[in-house]
Length: 376
Image (cartoon, rainbow, N blue to C red; front, side, top):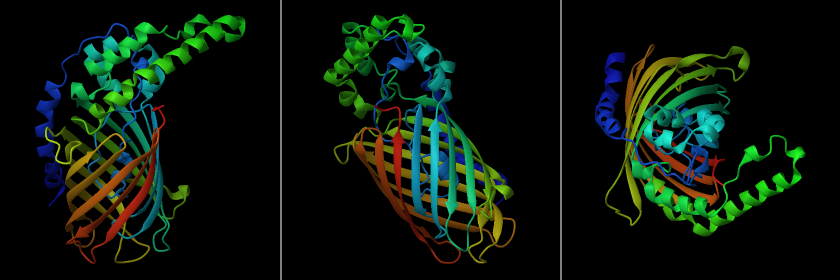
C-alpha cells in the first residue's frame, strides 16, 4: 500500500462530513443585548486533547474530540507511547483571532457571516515531546492548524438561543462594562471605580443566573467537524542543534452527538482519519536508529460523560509504509477517563494496547493535566 492508498483511508470521513458542514453553514438569529463575541463567556467543558500530541504519536487515543475552541489552553503529558518509550510533553492551544479580535467582532457578524465564524473557530497548536529512554532520546515538535467548518447550532455557545437568551437577561439588567469610558485610567478615578463596579455586578449576576452551569451540558460532546494540518520536526539527539523535518500530517475528525443516552448522560460517536507523510520514528528493532515511513490511521471512538467527567473507548487501525524494512499494519484499542478538578483544569488518564504489530504488542498509557485558561 503506497501513499495514494493511505490517503484513501480518510476519504470516507470527508465524504460523510462535507454535506453535514454545508448544512451547518446557516445563520442564526442575532441576540441584540449581547454586542460582541467576547461578551459570551466560555463554558467550562473538557479541553480537547491537543491534535499536535496526537500527530506526534504520543497520545494513546487518536480521535480528538471536536469541541468549541478556546482563547488559550495548555496540556502537560507523561506517557508510555505505543513503542514502549517513556515521553513527556507540553502543548499550547490558542485562537489568535478570538484572542486579539474577539472584543471587536460582533455577535451578529459571527452568527450571520460564515467567514467570520470560520476564523473564530480556527485554532493553532504547538506541542513538544521528549523521549527519556537511553535507547531513544529524540525530541519531537509539532505546529498545527485546525479549523471547525461545522458545529451544530445547539452545541455552539454563540448560536445556542437558550443560552444566549439567559445571558441576555443578565446583560439587560446590568450596565455593560465599557472600557472606552477611560482612555487613560489615571485621568479619571471615578470612571475607573464605575467600570470596576459594573464588572463586579455583571460577574455576580452571571453567577446568580447560572447560565454557564445550566447550559454547559449542551456544549459537552457536540456534533462538529474539524479539519487539520500539522507539520512536524524531530531532533534524534534531543538537541535543537540537529532539528530536522519529520513530515506533515493531514487529518479530519467528525463528532456526532447521539440522540440516546445509554448511560443517562450525553454521548458522542467520533470518526477520525489521518495521514502522516515522511514520519521519522525510532526503530524498535535496532536501538539508536530511526526509520522513515508514511502512516495512515482510521479510528472510531465512543465518548460519554457530563460537564465534570467523561470516559471513552476507541478502536483504531494503522498502516505504515516504510522506506526500509517491512511495512506494518496493526490495530489499537484504548480507553480513557477524565475528571474536572476545578474550573478550567482537567485530569485525564488513558491506557491501551496494540494488537498484531510486528514484534511484540505494547501496552501504553498516559496521565495528563489540561487547562482551559479562558474558562473562569
